[in-house]
Length: 116
Length: 113
Image (cartoon, rainbow over all chains, first blue to last red; front, side, top):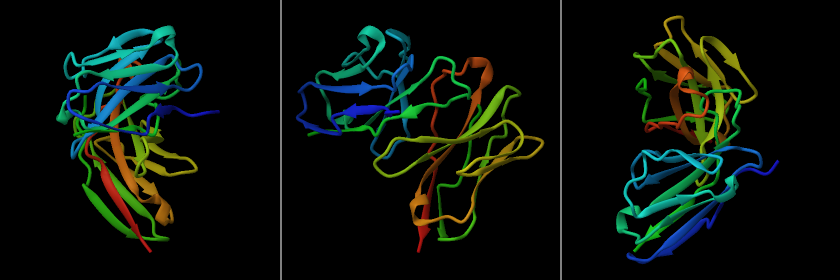
């Protein structure tokens, strides 16, 4: 079974540019989450999709971040315009709707975003 | 959500048993205890979960005393590849199985040859 994949693995952009991160969850997983870790900080929750619907977007830092999950499969996270403080590692995770364990999520390898 | 406290870092030698203790004094009745492992340049990976007493799988053991105010992750005979950050967290079953994860700082375990 393929795991969660993320693209790109690393992105370097200039301040003010736009970047789109992509996450492909494990096939059949209805839950999809985005997290990020900025330099020296803890991994922080951004938002949670159930299929194509946003279940919880309380962690989205501001309106420069836009997440979508059209069709309930893959998801994109767009940052527009990017700021220096957006640099960090963005993780995507997924879990099935009826996961047998609390808080059991499958994480991708992350996308390292560097804004210069 | 119950706050957890764990060591910032630990060093150990290959072949030893490593125990990482996590404190969660305010754990609620519905809370489960979960540990994640994160290797460098990878996402976190679920390794074990428990509610009380002892849980063992192919990766680790989890010891939870009767008062559940702490838990200990035990890694038997560690190798260099066990070098990682280990996160302890508690999750409320009542909130549902699909709730977001709140990560703390974790314990950075460094295995020495």
